[in-house]
Length: 347
Image (cartoon, rainbow, N blue to C red; front, side):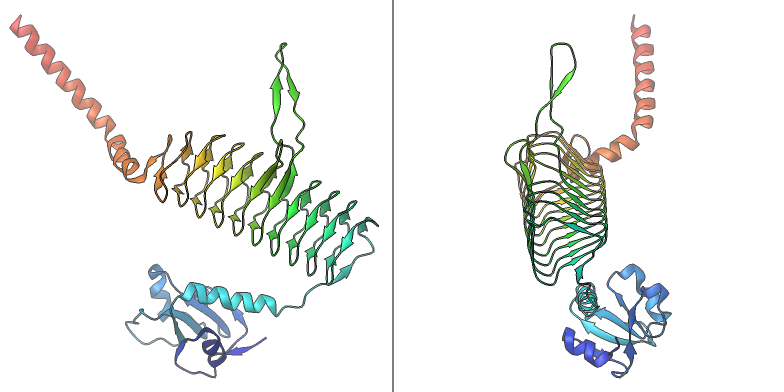
């Protein structure tokens, strides 16, 4: 579908600089812009590409002032990145939607399926499952007994949802995700072996959550593992039993959260963060990449980094000292030698 610069500017409430009649039908990165595509510039690091890009339309922030002439039609907006997201969402909404239940899928006679649902080949839907309207369930998904899925949910290929888990409205769950697998619960015995503790809870995922590929969310031992509204979870993340993740928290790839830990609202967990079990993380906490958190963080809205986690400014100062350790060691050895020489002379 084609859109003119004028149509896009009207939709975004932006200002045009250039030809308002130019048309685009696709998107491109600014450094790889092609005629007939729309690109954007929000990061100053990419400013040089705006003068070379062959994209027909480029979204820019209103405070950006070009240093020389730009061939593309420019649309000035408050936030180019957010505006691009709006246009991409509009483009996705205009794509044809899949509907209907494949004859190659198995749907239990006791399942309740809403209107305008798409169920792909080789999907398994168990007993007493409830699926809301406008959902898309792609190939090889497994939805076990008593699962409830609300409206406008997308499950990509190969998602597994274990029994009795609850999925809220407008959730997006990517390929390979496992929701409701057993928590890591084993009791040591007298002979040194381990006895499995039954995990009889479930997982509750609230509205507007997105979960990246190959992530696992374990069911609770008792009660529920809870992912609250608006949480965004990257690929390859482990969330253990009875964890609770607060609203609008974002979690980057390869992070692991141990059992029964409570993460606050609007936190940011960068890549490869590790969090110990049975602790609390305050609202608004930011954890830098590879941070290890062994203890509760009580103070909200602070940034932490390192292992064990310390305030980020302390970490940065410590890294300066750490880099200088070889020189400091030489200095200490030299001082020690001089002291020993002085002591021998005094004696």
